Image (tube, rainbow, N blue to C red):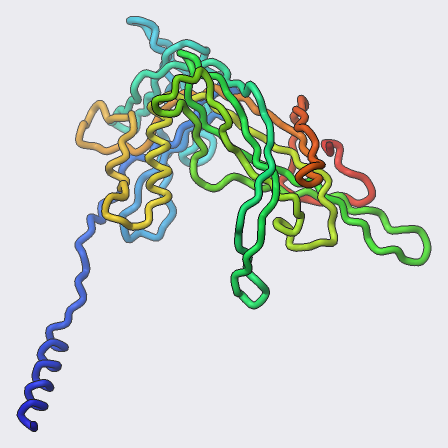
Length: 353
């Protein structure tokens, strides 16, 4: 018996002494060019941001690339016309003019002795929404109680949809979605004149992934149909965790960008990377290729995709009164600036719907 115990003890000591943590070797080289560009028919929406990649273990913010020459080149047969961007802040470049619909362009970036160029892309026509509508939506969801435990409840609200045309010149879209909830708080009555009402608003954005729409595979339809956008709850509590304010209405702001099929595929792959859960087949950064290359040194890697995006904003007004008492959406044809959130006392702000 004593011999068995000694043998067991020997094995434990042997394996314990052999234990060693494996640290994988990871390439720590950074410094590759990253191009984040958006060029539209609206000069206020246009920018080119240049940064460098960091080493894998680095915790520092991305290093901006300053002093570059950034050009938008219109390709016209054997002759080209060039517009040069101006730098406003480290690594941030802007153009003072916009591309012409139907014309072909490429982006050229010169950094010291290196020249980077994108493929030639066409400026698409202005995008449009052919119809906007809502439907009642009810589904099981969970919220956290004050004790930290999950509580099941039935979410009820309105799911918004759009239809958009598909043409030979424009068949793919990208959206940036912002919903604004307008609410009113009526203070409790006190002696003397009643206190003024509080008018407030809060903004909510779509999830951080790129929101894309394009033709369905094998579909013969000549338009994008019933493309879901944001969902808005009938209950103010789902957003503000209070029952003391009254939800008045919603303003939905839709920034619609017309894009190319190549841009659609690129951003769809990025979405797959954002949603990666660590499985063997998840895409990695080096598998997502852009359309920008270094003309002077083919070994240099460039991250980013250059595309021309036609742009239009739509705004819609909706009042939510429950499943059977919700207004038909009304399009808003004015575009004042609306702060992200805020309150006013006694009177609503000038843009209030």
